[in-house]
Image (tube, rainbow, N blue to C red; front, side):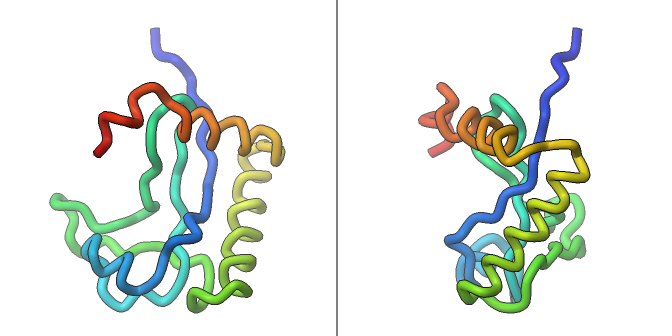
Length: 108
């Protein structure tokens, strides 16, 4: 039987052009949302290029990487999470379940 898992959008604050370039995205113009799945370790950037689809473009939920841009991206994430029916408490639970997952030490 398949376990239904919730997911949410989250903005990683440590993003900048160099951060994205190391992951194969040149010329990043802002924050890319991450998808965090309940009880699964880590997060994945939405719409990042993959080995199967090198032309896939990331979503940018801000212009630039300033504090204001970060707040703008977070507002987009909060709106997207609300559309999923998630409260801020739900999002915190999902993110914490990922951050403190027992398999996180295997991701290194």
